[in-house]
Length: 336
Image 1 (spheres, one colour):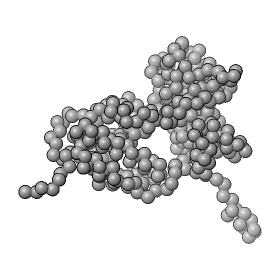
Image 2 (tube, helix red, strand yellow):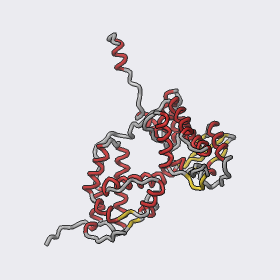
Image 3 (cartoon, helix red, strand yellow):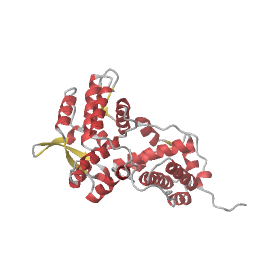
Image 4 (cartoon, helix red, strand yellow):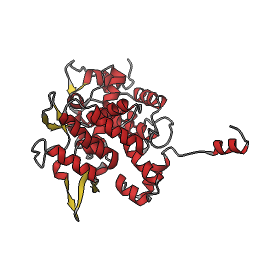
């Protein structure tokens, strides 16, 4: 008789239709909406890579997170599988920050499954002991667009619209992302009630990461775009600022998701011939452009809504910098 301890998830008989409401229980574990969205994105990727499911977006992802398929999920909830998956992410170029976030998402999932009695404590603890493989420190470099490229991107955001209402909405989206350094999650969650004035200045109350919320000045071009957008319908104060638009141009009551904002930025970049551009690339492009023109790090830090200047310094250090040493050396050698 084999007395070796076997993981509970290999001994449980799980009905084929059994599911786990991860989104519901995660609310009590992660207070930040940004963290919850990031965790669900990684759990979706974990299921896609480990169980062969298709990646989901928007409402489809929300539905999946409320009903994770246990017969597919539990067999891959093991320390060896988590370690192999993190290695796969490292091999595809994911940075240290992304790997830590991916690990935290799956370890949190294992803990919640254990609390629900669906995974044994031994397996959950083993998964918690998995460490990320070696990877480059900090964020991935991403893209750093020049101001001229940002202008082209804003124009392209309107050009890819298929209706007049979509054109106005996209002007608001691209204007805010290319000037106000908003994260896509922050813009997706914005309400009309977040707009106002402070000392006569138009401002937006931005609900950021880690339950941080601050006022950000709204540039005049964005103020005009917001006015044009609100003229198309009668928005309630507590309703979504950025909305879905149905075929034919009718504006929906529901807000646009963070994934939908990603697709708009990607579509505009493709139309502009800029290659792959993510919403966060616009945030780093703003920081880089301001630094390049001599704007103080204090101003940049306030715009990025970092808790202290040291974080901004590390953030800026990851941006691609000019390294003209080779060109100067070639000049010294008289090479053309």
